[in-house]
Image (cartoon, rainbow, N blue to C red; front, top):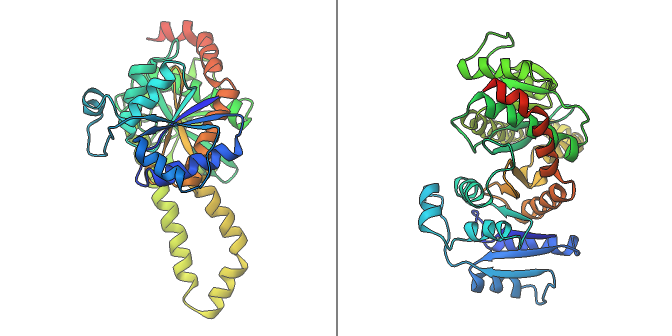
Length: 338
């Protein structure tokens, strides 16, 4: 399998992107990695290793999409950007997946434009896994679609259930709808209409889920629009960092609290690992006719290596094929509901 990696995307590109790709190439020796971006810059990074890698190639792309570029501008005016060329490799069948830590909007727009959507999918959505007390909870959408309709949220639930089954081994995942209360009548029109759609669809819908219940494992999947989901994801990330920093600062105030911190170190290390986005690598853009993994802008080599691993797993588990199959089962219901 070939994975196209946007070597110029991200705060630490190209150094950490290339380093992560090298780590992946060493671990997944039967797969090929295509580094897309400025050839000289990429080759300079590779030369630092003092040896060549048989399963790493370079695809030149002279332009870079910056974080200040609007997504539409990036796609229309920067046709030779590393993210666009990476997606095009997948569209032409020269790669099976794309991994990017660059401009999320550009990655979503390029993937939607060049890969199109899977059969039956109305809008693609980004699915992110948040650690909970008893495992994980998949939040979808976390930024691809901020103008959602009930059918979009319904399909997000179906697509995330496939991801949950084939990537996380949850046989019959529970789907919840993010809302301001548990009662059926709570929420805005989008929430109420989506609630009715999910309730009558036959999926394992457990009702509304409040923000505080996400970490209690009430649902394996929580659906929401991309605007709310993106805020939720970044709030959770910031809260985790603040929580650990506050504990560390408090524990350093005296000799005895330092001893207590040392004794609890294994527990805190385990907690830190669960909250570390680099452990998950990247999040998939579900619903496009290909595999697109979107990474955190601050991704380091570890995150990139794991993102490539996720891309390989999605392909080898035929997640897209299963999504199409599951959506076909609900197509008649969705058609009558819309």
